[in-house]
Image 1 (cartoon, one colour):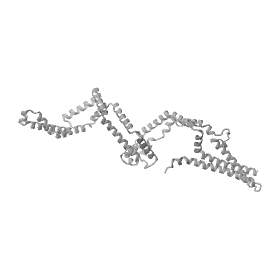
Image 2: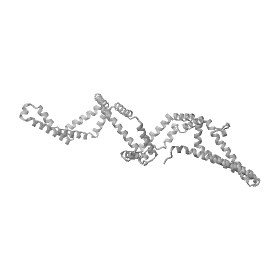
Image 3: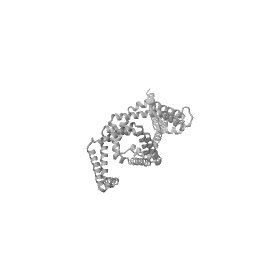
Image 4: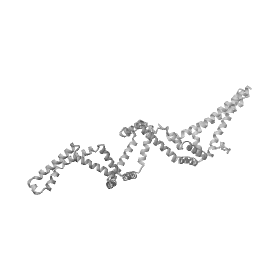
Length: 418
């Protein structure tokens, strides 16, 4: 269970206060010990060693207390020169910190050198291939994505999506793409199933509309033909001929009509790529389709379905990772780990993106740090730094008290022995 933000914020401050109390109590204890030893050292000469230790410990503790306090404020409120160092120099501290960031982290060459050892693609691949069942990263990312999708205006965002798709469609000339696709399909003989499907559809359409053909022949036949009853025979002959034609085309891949159809497809592929008039007609048709309300409504519905699916996945990432979406992500993760060329390309892209961000926004980041520190008041920056490093500084007071006492004791021993 992660600590609450309030606990996380107050824990360093509580540790600092506890160590400050320990250091102060140690200094008070050394003072009490000194006065007690001073009062009884004539009756008990051995107390001279205790007195020497306590006296030097007081001096060391007081010196370190003064040094530590002088960093953040005036000791005892006295305006002693060269005290309250951090509040008086906060602007210089901000500039120094900004310069440190600029010279050691935000130089493009430095960023590029450090990014060479960072395997972004490998990390992404490992995370996608073996996602942790739960964790702060997944929960935080899911919650952020869900909040972002829910906070966006559906009507405005849907309109933006439809407008973006429509604009993209209008900027793409699809006639050459269709022509190249058709040409490639014919080269690889992938058009044969299409012809087979057309022939099969034609045969089924003929079977389903035999009565319509008979009626058409009967209506167009002369009265003599009708009187002789030849219209029915003529209709049956037409239907039988068309049926045999469709069967022959289905069975014979080299049927003349199939060859004519292939020639027509080849001419269509060439015209789509090189005939300005045909390409213009296709563009007009494309724009009419793109601006059709039914198409825009379909795009809007497609976006809403996508948004709803993303929301479901974000609210329940465990369920999403268990379905096809999760399987696709795992396959992507395995590919990122195994495909050396893809990994190299992705790492190169990440390196260029980070280096570009450092080159473009590095100066802005440095300026932001400097101006932020400069905008803090003295009490704010003093409190934040004191809470951050105050505990360690109180250890300096404790060590100073002990080391000073030991030094005083050693000096007293030398003095007695000599």
